[in-house]
Amino acid sequence: MRYVFEAALWVWDARREDTWVFVTVPADASEEIRELTGGARRGFGSLRVKVTVGGSAWRTSIFPGSDGYVLPMKRAIRRAESLDVGDTATVAIELADF
Image 1: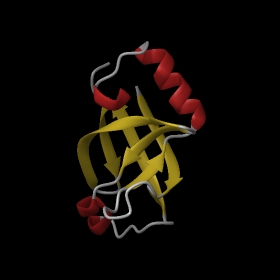
Image 2 (image 1 turned 180 degrees about the vertical axis):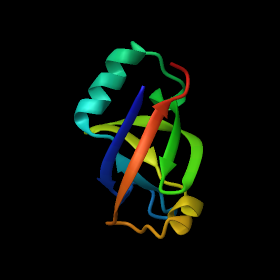
Image 3 (image 1 turned 90 degrees about the vertical axis):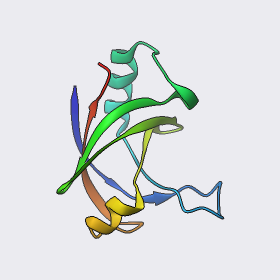
Image 4 (image 1 turned 135 degrees about the vertical axis):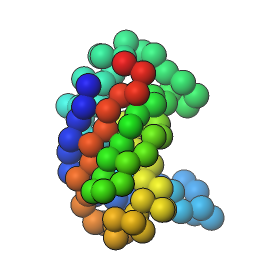
């Protein structure tokens, strides 16, 4: 299953010494992913995904969050796509194991 959405980049405040930047997968897509995966999870409740943002593609995991799954945005990808915290990105994710 493939999901395409727009989301703003935000910083995870829990780890100030490290800069972890994420986007949040929309609630409707997050709910559909939960139903589709039937509770299958890896460490920290993660699910493996293939991601495309602009001309960049990579594999990573999404993690459950309070408002839906969250997707970490690697620094190298942010640089390559000229994205910063607060910017909105068009993101495509595809579940890797389903």
